[in-house]
Structure formats: structure tokens, C-alpha cells
Length: 519
Ligand SMILES: *[C@@H]1O[C@H](CO)[C@@H](O)[C@H](O)[C@H]1NC(C)=O
Ligand SMILES: *[C@@H]1O[C@H](CO)[C@@H](O)[C@H](O)[C@H]1NC(C)=O
Ligand SMILES: *[C@@H]1O[C@H](CO)[C@@H](O)[C@H](O)[C@H]1NC(C)=O
Ligand SMILES: [Zn+2]
Image (cartoon, rainbow, N blue to C red):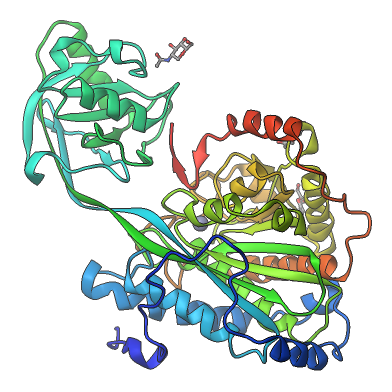
């Protein structure tokens, strides 16, 4: 049962603020005078100095769950427009989330200076779709940011298998014109395949998986020639390919009703007035969800952990500055964090000693996963130290851990590319839990870590309280430790041409841009 929510009760300041792009200068502070800041510093510096253990001791499961409930209520503000709760960018549920974070932060007695950064973001919605190949439903998933089929109507044509991987225009023969192009996954992005198919005159494109499992991804930044594009699993493609190979004709129909828009959205930043302002520990989670659901675990769990830690930190004084970020547009391809990292001046860049990403901390079939960031693979120096800190942190909390690839799936990418050491932990998304992991963590083998990942059921029942509490303690330890001292942590190195070149090189390893597969 849902009682109609009155957004204006929660959001007295009004929702629709920030109509101009803010200047990239950072932090863009609210009009707090130097006198106000000095007064806040005087008050808060009398508090006991923070350390990892004392901050971790402030974490209460109930506080985390209460914040999750607030967030879920806010997600319902979108129901009128979306028909279900969501906090996708551009929705009232997302605006409400941002406002909620800002309101909590601005009630903390000037402990933080608040900044916000407005930026343009591409946002898409897919309302309905259907793909029939031969005479059967192909169980397709539309790619994110796909354009609709012509006139948002069903289109009919022959199915044509594209040669090779569809990464080159020459893979598309003349028979693709007016047809549904069937393309194997691999070697280049889905966006590239869609664009090539569009240029060749296809009426829709279908990418089939080159490994077991269903295929869903994003086309990425819209291009002129993108056409309506689906992903399907291999099992649904093989019978069609066989028929085509035998010289038989296969016809099909495709339908996508979708829109792609550019909207303005914003990151929220909070920085302690206390502490060395030239040496900051930074951490972030994302404020948005996917359109399909309310995103209580993804990333309500991370973003609300940050908020709770930000509130609890005000009981202490800090030696180094702490900067929290709530990113927008993560689900559309890490847009907010990338925008932020790319717009740092060299001086501001150097002040960030490390960035910690906290995305999905309470999956119900969880594993304690540490991003395997290593200095050896060109990740900025310090990334491995952070990884080792998490190892010790989990050991100290008496739990097992695993390493997972540092492959581009969350908001650390922009920081790594900007030369800033980064890392983080997570509890797992659509990956499958192994029997070994069941011995280490409990839970169910053969099932997703988060069975409601990117779905409507990512609601209040989709949280594991134990995992969330353990991770919130780990997050507070990470903040407490580096807010107390950077002793032993590598200094930031100068951003030389050589380092920039290494970074360019490291870009190639990202298989994802955010949660969405791009190739
Ligand atoms: C991808 O490229 C490799 C190397 O060029 C090639 O062997 C492979 O067949 C390509 N994949 C597809 C789907 O064509
Ligand atoms: C972590 O990264 C290191 C360095 O690249 C690699 O040697 C190691 O095998 C990785 N460990 C796991 C579990 O992925
Ligand atoms: C850690 O994993 C081992 C199996 O690898 C298991 O025996 C042990 O009970 C686990 N520890 C905890 C705290 O779950
Ligand atoms: Zn996420």
C-alpha cells in the first residue's frame, strides 16, 4: 500500500533549482561567508579527533534502514510519470533524492561547505518493444539509449546476417538495406554496430551474444545513424543463423517506442570546513537509479551510507579534509563522476589524495568484493595501498573477501583517468555466486548476488542488513583513517606527459562504462 506522497512536504525549498550550467570551478560553494566558515571551524574543532574505530562505532543498522525507507518513499514521487517508483535522472524521484541529501547536509551546523555541479546528461527511456525473428519472439532486450523504430511503429523486413563482427562498414552488404541486421557481439561497441547498420540502411539492428546469457547494454552517446537496436542471447540467434546459412529466408518484425533526451542534472558535493584543505580524502556514491526501479540497493545502499557517515563524522574533528560526492547520471554511463573529474583544474586535482567508490553495499546474496586495483596495471600509485587497506579492514571486521576486476563498472573511472588513486568495495550485481563463495559468505550458489539488480524489485526487501552494516563500518573506517592521517600513503605525483600517456593506454581496458556493457 502506498500513501500518496506530498513532495512539497519533504522539499520545502522547491525542486527545480539550478537552471544554468554551473562553472566548472570547484567547489562551487553556497553563499557562506568567510565569517560563517571561521565560526564553524571554531565550534567543530573542539570536537574529539576522528579515528577509524571511533567513527565505525557510530554506525547503526537502524539508521541505515531508516534512510533506505526515506529513499524508497522519494522514489514513489515518480509514479505519476513512470507508473512505478524510480529515481532515474530527470524524474521527480531523482530530484527528490538530491534535495534530500542537500537538506540533511545543510542541517549539520556548518560542518560542511556544500557544492553542486550542474551538467548536461543524455537520458533515454524505452517504453515498449518487441522483436520477432522468423515466427517466434526473440526474447530481446532493447539497448539503452536506442532510438525508436520508424514512427514508433512496427517495422517489417528480412533478417540478414552481417559478415564478421559488424565493426566495419564493409561488413554490411547491399541486402542490409530495408532489413533487420543480425550482428555478433564483440570487438567494438554496440553503438558502433548500430551506427554501421544505420548507415547501411537497416531498419533495426540485433546484436547476439558471443557467450552464454542474455545481452543487454547501451549504445552510449547518441550518434546520427544509430537505429533501433536490441540484444538477444545466442540460443535465440543460432536457429535463425542456421536457416540463413542454408539459404532460407527469414523475415521478422521489430518495434521500439523510446525517447532520447538531453537534460540537466547535478552532482552534490560536501566538504568538511575542518582539516587540511589541500589534502582531501574523497568518496562517492551515485544518487540516481535506473528507470526500471527504485534503486534501493543500487545505489541507495552506497549513497545513504555516505550520508549517514557524513552525519556521524560531525561528532569529530578531522586533520585532513573529507569530501563526499553524490554523483548523478551513473546509470547513463558514469556521467556525473566523469564530468567532475574531467573538470578539475590541475591544482584541484592534486588536492584529492584518493577517491573511494561505494556502489551497491547491501546485495542480498552478497560477497564482500574489493576492486582489484593494482599499481602494476597502471592504476595511479596509491590504488593498491587502498586495496590493501580494504583487505585489512575486512579482516578486522572478521569477514572473508574476494577481488573483482577493476573494469570500469562504476564511478572510479574518471578518477583513474585523471591520475587520482582510486578503489572501492561492492557486494555484487548480476554476477553468479560460486559454491566456494557460499562457503565464504553464505547465500545461494548459482544465483545473482543481487537478484533484483536493475529491476523494479530493488526495493526495501532487497537489502541484506548484515552486509550493509559491515560495509558501512568499512566505509567509516576508510573515512576515519584517512581523515586522521595520510601517513604512509603515496604523495600525489605530478601529472607529466608520460603519466597522461599511460592513462590513455589504460582507458583501453574498460569493457564497461558504468553498469552497462558497451561492447
Ligand atoms: C574479432 O576480431 C578477431 C581478431 O581480428 C577475430 O578473430 C574475430 O573473429 C572477431 N570477432 C567476430 C565476431 O568477428
Ligand atoms: C589482481 O591483480 C593482480 C595484478 O594485476 C593480479 O596479479 C592478480 O591475479 C589479480 N587478482 C585477482 C584475484 O584478480
Ligand atoms: C571464510 O571462508 C572459509 C571458507 O573459505 C570458511 O570456512 C569460514 O567460515 C569463512 N569465515 C566467515 C567468517 O564466514
Ligand atoms: Zn550503481
